[in-house]
Amino acid sequence: MKKMLIAMALLVNVYSAMAQDVAIIPQPNALKQTRQSFALSASTPIQLADENFKGAAVFLNGYLQNYYGFSLPVQNAASNKQSIVFSVQKSLSAGAYELTVANKAIEIKASDAEGARNAVATLLQLLPVAKQQPLTIAGVQVEDAPRFAYRGMHLDVSRHFYSVAQVKKYIDYLAYHKMNYFHWHLTDDQGWRIEIKKYPLLTQIGSKREGTIIGRYPGTGFDNKPYEGFYTQEQIKEVVAYATERSITVLPEIEMPGHSMAVLASYPQLSTTPNIAKKVSTTWGVFDKDNNVLNPSEETFTFLENVLLEVMELFPAKYIHIGGDECSKIWWEQSEFCKNLMKGKNIADAHALQSYFIQRMEKFVNSKGKQIIGWDEILEGGLAPNATVMSWRGVKGGIEAAKQKHDVIMTPGSHCYFDHKQIKNEDSVTIGGYTTTEKVYSFEPVPTELSADEAKYVLGAQGNVWTEYMNNFSKVEYMIFPRMSALSEVLWTQKKQKDYTNFKTRLAVQKQRYQLWGANYFKGNLETEK
Image 1 (spheres, helix red, strand yellow):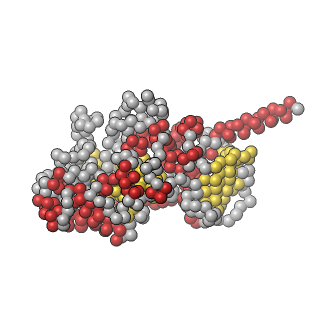
Image 2 (cartoon, rainbow, N blue to C red):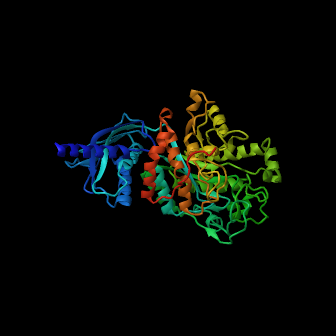
Image 3 (cartoon, rainbow, N blue to C red):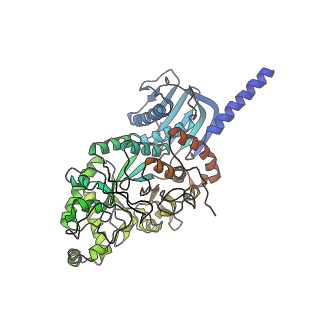
């Protein structure tokens, strides 16, 4: 009797341990724990019922290999062994999945590759953090689907450059959190980071700056250290293929008409002041003293069209992000060419000239079967007919665009800018601002000002990582974690299920995973300091 009681106590402890370890971020729609478990080992086969799920299997095996030192055999035929079985469930919506972990099998059902990837992302969080053999996975039944179609993260590689391996790691972080868009900010005043074969000077000159200011703008000095880096087209293809395998769409951004100092350093004839020497910017900010704005000439449009032709060949996404933000209009207002252009085309002012510029580029992009996304400044002077607006200056631009029946991606600086400090007294140099994990979690992407019909135009949201003060990838990790985990739940979990207290409990387990990944993260106070 005594032995039986001891055995029962041990069993209770096992189930308690499993219960504590089931801490999924983002929170699933429905999760039920069972009294079963699955023992995962290197001999466990993966059965694929559909080739579309191959990427999810690669994603799973990559994780197991990286963090547990083994991978699983993949096969199409059924097996008598305990298996991980992927099967098609056509009734499920895009990105949705069903996951069952039982004694004899792990079953994953989805209608598409993204749904299978999302199921794997949940399965990875059921793995014990300890590297034991076999890996005991708690029994669960999960039915889950995303709240928003667009769940993204942005990374600026112009201000500071990150290797292909680091970009892939960033993409993995997105996949672990069930995000599906990677917004790759490839060009800006401080560096052009993508090879364009028709215009080699963009990387020969535009990818290099003489140095960088020290400290927060305007800086306490200048480091005089040449800084450079760009991705070859083969490297771009490699990253896109890696992301696609993980059901992540890569959204390239080619800035225009402002933030173009790196372009003008390479091809000054595209400026309204072609006779004034220009160089890749060594500082940050919006420029009025230095001309970083493209001239809206036929030569410029031909240049941009040729650039975008090569970009579109590299990125299968239906979207091209064309920037459109912080364009200093004084250079157009001072230009005789621009004055004559506005007069000849009956363009009212410089804001309307930007609208002309954006609509001209949109027409070209649309002719190639693609659509443009731009920052909310593209609303000024009149919105391009098919454009999607990325609202960063609060949500006002998103509200305006949705009311005009345009798709919107919310990314307000107040909640979604992860270059902001995380505590009032910052512990490292940041751009400023103050955005805690708690504040990120409180974000609601659909403003109350929108009707139910208008709200349908809000595709989702994303977190932005501007890297002026992130000169190494460890700092990037520090700035995104755990804020990115909070945002993932904002974008995935149904509004009525969100609970910050519960999220913090699950985050304690997630932090163990950060450590497993070897990721740096913020360890301070997550709540807003009063």
